[in-house]
Length: 151
Image 1 (cartoon, rainbow, N blue to C red):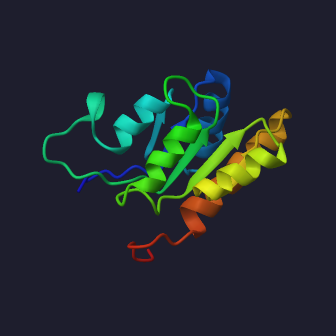
Image 2 (image 1 turned 45 degrees about the horizontal axis):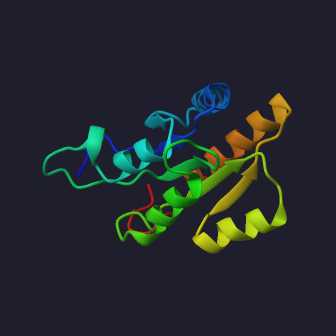
């Protein structure tokens, strides 16, 4: 197993949103082991140790939580979530959808695919920072994932 497991995988192509999320997680000491990727293809390569992230013989160690933007290049968020939830190695990993869309058909679609949470990015800076802080506390400190001992 990876000796330095990743706590958070942030899949976000917008540099401003990524910077804000990373800054808030770090400010609250929730980003010690954070990896930021900018598109869906890179996210899948990271998660399954392929392409740029291929490590001979190293089994994957999924992150504690994945923060996934919907509208990302190369492989969209929908396809990334489908792949995560269809693979035994990652299917129990919590995936938090980050988006600007609060359309009800979208929300149902994502939950039906296995999303753990659906967060609408507030346009207001303080609300966005609060949402990131709260989801970090919930998924990194309070959540007890399968297969991990309380710590």
